[in-house]
Length: 427
Image (cartoon, rainbow, N blue to C red; front, top):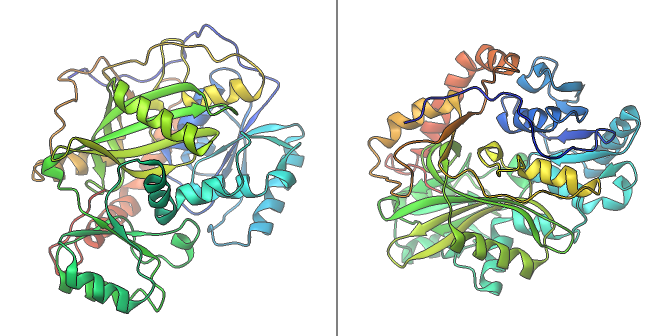
């Protein structure tokens, strides 16, 4: 395999609009977010002034040499939308000029879309139908859109009461997968801590007793990992829903196993998947950055859409075309009236998230999951945290991760194994 290399500043055949800054927008407490660091570096290396909302002054993002200023604003994601909008507007005033908004979570993407009129003028962002991001971020809303437009997805049920869950359990084929149904609600009243594989009827009913009178979950068909391969699509679509940047790749490992964020992935050309994604986006009329998770089911030869993130994905720096364009750069160029250079994606390139790939590697050795489309040798490697031209975020991550990070990983692992003691995670 190709050895890891620190990402260095490289020349690109285009210039960004340096008079227009960008703001990383995030709600909730997740300070160790490599996606935000990646966006700061990506635009910062082009000379774009970068700002970020951070939990405190000692997050990896706040330590980046490419960050002009961190706005310390601890949030939970459960605040009233009006309060969050007011906070964004205050930050906009402090920046002093229109800035491109780069949301890193569903709550931020939904808030921006639903409050475009209040935010317009002070910020730049792709115009989108106001209710669409919330529907896409909703597991139920996404499933309904897939059915409406003929996109394959796992069969699913949306119980409204505990009685519905009992009825479902009588007929379901186990294992099944449970996910929180809605953005925002997952922060205030989470039913599960993440995508959870439930092995038995008894395990489902035991978990469901804690979900309250109105369980905010989706119960989904389990796609056996031994018969599947996980794929990802990242892209940026302009106001006509045309792809200005489109990338496909295969996920080798994630943490928690088969359910959490990408820990190791490769760029792999997949024209069929790119066409499927572009067709779906055109049909629903979405504008902006997307991060899709799909599972190829070898049993019927279909790509089944699992998650639609209407915002930048944490692993977006895996993907860059030959012109040096990634999805965040494409968005900034487009919103500032500059052309987005075309180019082939860097096939065979690898992405590693250092702090979670090792435990993922150990777990996957026992899982039976394979990725036959992954290259046997990487053409190059992008590390999520370590960069020779920006080392402090990596060091800050290590300082904050070692003890609490290990505890958090252990808690995630235990959560995924609930459900009659035989559950594990899958996405």
